[in-house]
Length: 482
Image (cartoon, rainbow, N blue to C red; front, side, top):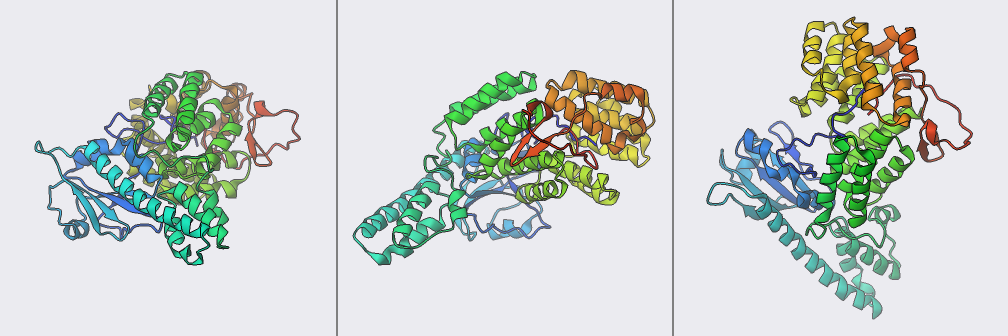
């Protein structure tokens, strides 16, 4: 079954902000025992005053808050029903407040609405920037003194350097310097932890918005991508990445363009690995893990791909990853498990048209045909969902309509042969189209079907092969074009 996305980034951007950034808020609901993770250095705790405020706030699309998440600032949104946290922080029902809190939960600063009752995102951003700058100044001063003591041969300064190293996630470049000073004292730090701080030349994530051009470039790139002008979009995304190499949102857009739109999986793989090998926000990391998982499964390494999906969900739950887990387990014959992941995808964004279409495929397969047909008819114009609309129609027994939507998918939606050939291969192995697999019209439509390959550590698509010795692989079940 396909999981093609209506949005090229693999996540919903409908956050009421009109922004290309999406803050990875963690929901502290009344039913979960939420607590800060080990790497949390600072928290932004948001108490919305209503469901509407929580849905429409510009706090969902803040570039500053997204960049801060790269530096271990955890954004937490408290549900209206969570009385425990509201009582702990003295937030009355119907009151909107944002708190800055230390990793132990102690309150650092409280931001309240203005005279008009509006809680402005720029005020939250400025408060966060000031607190990060204050901490950085403190740690930088401690490091400067410690480095001078190291030069003087003082062997007792290791404890101060360890304090700076412990905050490496918030201040990666200070952490790198502390690691070098510790090495002079004969104290080795974890090579893996050091590597994940990125190259020595990489700046810390831009919480001060010193690169305002990046947001404009990403907006223009996304507009071009949604219009199908993929090479134009690539140009804007690449320029954004060059403008600020530390911005993993820019890398995420570029990697997904290569994976989903142009099919250049060698470039996608390298871009996703870059995200994972430098400080990154949770959404960028989750998208990278999902993308690597998709490509790994396409290349025939099913268990490895599944593990990457699971790592993606553990990092940050995205509807696309839940949908692909549903597809994976459906192809393995575990329909109840698959349906559970489908429901989780729908729960994350129940109003999203693509989530509804995806769920309707399961409705059709489980003999709830009338409900599935209503969804298909209501979303007939969604070009990006043509593959799944075809799956609905074939499950309800209308093969002519299924062929109509498959043809639309392959000839109107997909524009690159590398992607088209792999998706044709998927359709030929997709359980949902089993009743078409011997149909002459279907076979003719999918005659360019080809597999993807993994050569060493590099992914590639059939049209990227250059006399490479490869062995075609057969997938046991399709995981969809996305």
